[in-house]
Image (tube, rainbow, N blue to C red; front, side, top):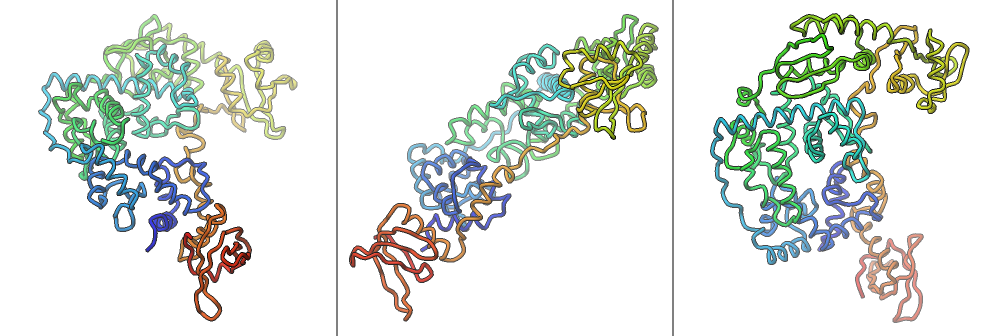
Length: 572
């Protein structure tokens, strides 16, 4: 009879790299695990403590199925390597399930039938829509800040205290703890990713910023549903009633807190009633597995406008929530001073220069503001645009291909002198070169360093023409976050380079190595040249060159046996 460890080792070896990595990740295996082959992996995964930890990752339906000696076709027991090819739990799994059922019988009883939530009243629906609108605005602020400068993460994962303070000072978030909920929502919808030690906005996130609020909500709602754990999902593609969430993973002591976090996210995005007593029409459709549709929410959302009042005091007043695409562009050239149903934006030389740094020109700004304004463009703003444009570009940065350096030029010698002695620019290593300064740093890095230091800089292409460059040419990270397959690549290579699992040879060699390692006394059955089989009781001493060495206690001699002739190995 084949042992469970041997059967599991064979199953693991038969998995593709992606599936094997998914199993290792689901079981929480360290990528630095000191395994040498699939037999090590199987034995480790079938240890009682490892199985107990795996059981906490199973929902109530999976636990009941395992107690009954089978696994659910759509469950996670197979992914967690708890059942064999026929779906039956391994012996140690069955033992640990029985022990868990004895100590926590309530975890193995079917959940009570869900009661359909009552439809929400209009007043409650309006409150939910307002929360969703406010949250969408906060997330947009966070993503915009992240586009300008990625949010730094600490070694433990959360955003750094400095960046939290920066976002709070800018009015993007009201409380520090709000940031984690917003980033979780963004990650679920694919709008931002945590890459190495920072959060960065994806291309999808940049497109989301320009979308109307209903479309923004739909993207988030779909992302939240897709990211729910399997125990909360239904076969129809929807999710269980939130009232049942706290008991979905009954053996996991951390689950109730996690379920509370998920419910809080839903409340923040207008999916759930804080009291949990009623359900909104847009949530009912989503829970049933239908596509997210904000049509039923739209009547409760504030109407977005496409016009502002430009004032002579260099401010713009939006009498209502400005359409996201217009708000996004206006904020590229004006600093928003207040955010509410009516928002205020202020134009300054610095804000206009920042817009020009991102590719705007005096002409494009005037055309945009003229189309947006209900009052035309006031003369003070016209003057500020012209004066800023005249000064912008006084510093020019270009790549000097032949010399492999970057040149910084300006018709204003005093401005170049100021740049040369600016201590903030010392990392660029600027040195005089005729009437210019040169650096070994790449052109784009020099450009952004000068722009951040508030110098009126433009970049020139190879032909000497002004070129618009962006801090992040792509919203995706330069190197994508490692997948599970990449994370476990080294360990998987070691496992596949270990003993084979086909037939008897791999398992036999495995047993012999273990016996030698522990100096165990074993019974070795050897097939003799005439076809007869003979047993020897040996204390295993060494294995190499295709031969097993061991001391025969009965004959008091050391024997050397060809491994190819060994039929079986047993404990003495």
